Length: 587
View 1 (cartoon, one colour):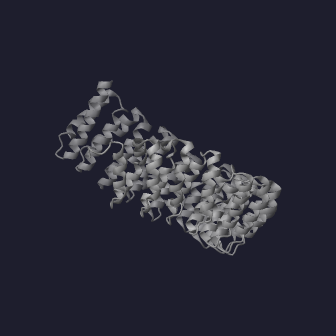
View 2: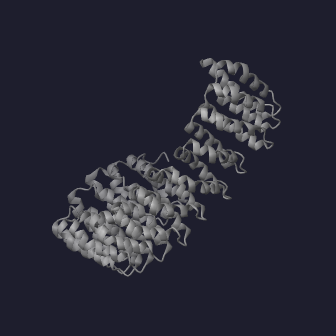
View 3: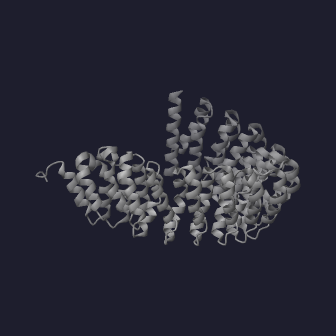
């Protein structure tokens, strides 16, 4: 090895490793390309490394993907922008491989390099590359070319611009659906780089071809093009060219295209403006809300609040609300769930009277839905309706649903409702909460599932923060402390956890007088798990209580636990004693 000239050594290793059978060695070598390029210097990188990479036909996609990624940031290693065109040949080769993710990464790297190229290099090297790919025999090359036109076009001379627009039009009529799909996907980016006069004529004619494609996979990508082109056209052109296409797409024979329209509807409305939306898109949207396919109704239902924001309340009540009523009793639980997650947002749009008269009955029927996700989606957005109509009307119907969810047989449903309890508490107010929900919060501390008990302990702390220590002292602390005598040690552990969470909220006095004696008493428990949890709780209480309490009460208890027969109890007691020593030293 010592005989080899030092600068040659890295390239020799690289060549060896790139030909190695072990894919990991080949990958490592590719990922170290920048290091090797620095060792070789700019000139040798251009003359030796890049040609070598151009000839390297590795058959493993992972290696090719890494190479496509590395070459995208390689301009500094070949001598800067003036030599950047040497990077084009290896990336051109990568644009023709069969694996999609390699091609996409190569196109991304070419776009990054193309954006930095000098105008002369773009005309002499980049545009010919795009044309070669666009006329490639293998469909992969043509697919890749579609993503490069928006980089090549802006700096091209007029004659070349005309040619590029013609080539793109041909790609949109290619025999292979994959090529047409790529052309449809990239149409918005290409259109953004085309001048306004040509946009109206050439690009709109290309777009019309795509919207009438016989493959639904191409037409659904053209839906995205509607929104992109709508932002580039003048409002009157948008209404003339884009609006009829959207209306037609909303009645397309393929449900996937209709789904795409429902999903993109708000963006499409923004593209055509509020007036055409009210006159032309409302009937189209109503059709989507009543579509035969559940997937289309799900997408449409999820956009109902956003769509209604564009309309006035009268139009919403007249056209949209009847559909919403139908959807609230839809045969698909997923449609009802999608509706429940957004229906609350309609309350501020409709105002108090219309909400009480029209929306509340729908809201109540969803609260009684047999599917728990629907009920949870309603309860999680409760504050939006409360702000409009007040809690009195809500609370009468709300409580039975909450109680039912609180006792649901699926523990994840119970967990979700616990997380909403503090929000409900703040909405309902302390009086209503005490009467109806207090007992539920205590009941969860004795649930059979640990996640529920843990969430219930956190819930107790958040309620104490919401309503204040005095309320907690009266309504929470006594019930929590009573449970420390539960015969099952797991429930006693939950109470210790709840005490450690409550202590910082309750303050030093209540902690010393009420909480600490219960913890000290628990140190005599016969179960080691309880005893080492006592040590952990005492450690968390040390910063909260006075120094004298630590000395007189906490330390003696910890010293006793540190001599316990159980090794874990001794370990945690030792940790707590160290913590108390540090506090004493710092004070």
